[in-house]
Length: 253
Image (cartoon, rainbow, N blue to C red; front, side, top):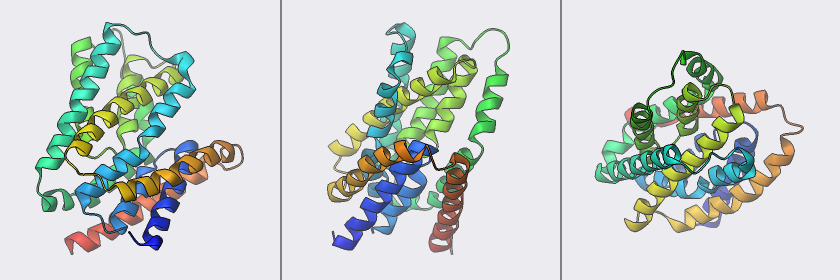
């Protein structure tokens, strides 16, 4: 890849690392950057998944005091997330390139909407719990369905998982976030194994973005003390809306 393209991916990774540490929503920056680098949409999606995957695991380990007990319920949740991630990745790779390209503007738009309304979605989910929690089977089925989307595209997965988990445990936001990151890690790793085995990852682009994401995440951990999260969220939402409109104009018209 040309140096200027590598520089673009490094910068996008760094920016994604910063915004993820402060407000989340890195995929709204990193995935369009992969497309701008000239990667085919499916390869861009797979490479992006690999590049940003360490973030969820690092976040879960950072608050390991809230990690759930290793019991049957956790095993069932991890199994559902893993199988869903595998199914989503296989679905992505089974589609013709053009079939994935057409909904890209909608997928970016959906992810932007999920990110924009995340606090309201999670608050609504928490209010939905009245009386007994959902059964383990129903919860696992819903988790598997969300995980299929995560393996297929991934942007907005954290919001979906947080909303689902908030229904079961609305009173401990830290526990919800840790479990969300743990399940997102399972989805991502399952999808990544499929992408790597099938040769769908562009390693040059992936490593360039990952090289930026690591220091970006570190910087974001410090900038979170001085940058207002609301302003960062608005900037990410604006970028997502712009990218959705831009790719709609390029692909549909």
